[in-house]
Length: 430
Image 1 (cartoon, one colour):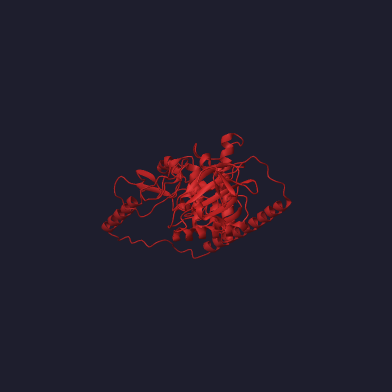
Image 2: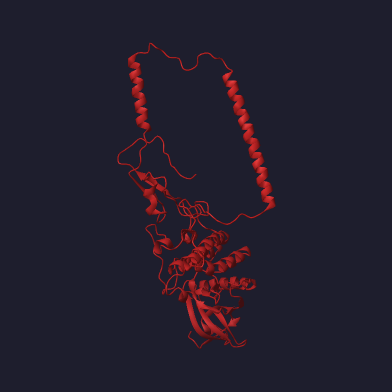
């Protein structure tokens, strides 16, 4: 097949090839519909009709594409027709099937990230509608098949769109969800983390455990929430994984709000939080709203507080009166004046041992513990043991309950010599 050739019993003239999914023998072409005189997107399933297994897989793909023809969403190109051997495809074309979709204007996704990754805010904007499309499709029991970057185009509005329909025959809902994580990973790193990607694209690096490294390990400017969202969506098994498109969409929207704000601050369109104190509190000079209902609630709360305070004071007073009205006899522990000096010495020795055991011991070193990737605020870890109450170590901001994004975060301390640690005391805001 080459540009200028025709397929589909001569109806579609091939204009430009835009990609190949080698796993399914699917070739992606822009073509011209000679009957309706419009551009279309063709997914050509190339194969030998004599290969029974290939023919069976092609039929399954065509069936799924036909089911998706009734699905409408701005982030998914509408399926216009499904052709099979003997029904729109002649025997000599070397094709097992064709999925015809409306043409999606815009740019190939690979061309968009050819010069490097996009900003976190842009990645969220580009991906959000496609995530919503996956969620709606899954609610109808449909698998879209978005697990190859050359199936995706970027529209004039900057939004990702499934341009070439025809999911793999064995694809499941989970494959779509993993593909969302892969697309987010691609936008943030310009690297593809799933097997079977196009050869012209750089694959994602893997760690010692065989899993792809987090996007934040490649680009330090990637927010922790987006980095964790991508890696936990890609991961199979284990705790804290993202298994549904609904969960992915929820976390993505939360991360998008933070990314959008950071982008506005960096561009100067929004002033930074200059009144934010070191502990994360926010001060404001904005005047309170004049809300009568709120004033009534405050007044009622203050009244109840005063009544409760008076009741407590009265109770304390009665308790004191009752205490002083009790027997005036001698109180206190019995003292054995005949106690030997030896026993007193033993008691003093035990008291000294307790005092030594109770002495505070500060770790000589402290480091951030994180089982996955780089820890939170690594450079601030020594502030946790410097003895200065005005300095502190704190984690990144997590809007999802752990282990949704990671299995945990904390500090690991070491001492100059072995110690017996009966109790540990941690000072913080909570």
